[in-house]
Length: 78
Image (cartoon, rainbow, N blue to C red; front, side, top):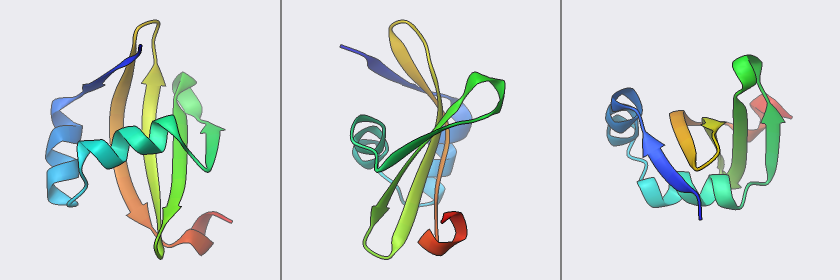
C-alpha cells in the first residue's frame, strides 16, 4: 500500500484552499485523468461539481509525494 507524504508547502496550500487530504488522496487514487508533467511529476485531475481539482505529485517506490493541489475551471484544461 502506498503512503502519502505532504510537503510543508502543500500542507499550507491545502489549508489555504480549503481542500482536505481525503480529497487530495482520492484524486490520486481515482483520477479522471493523469498527465505526465515536467521533472518526472504527474498531474492527477478530477472534476468535482463545477471545479476541476488538480494534484501535482511525484511517485516513489513506496509513497506519493504531494507537491501542490488546486482547483480551477474545467474548461481551462480541456
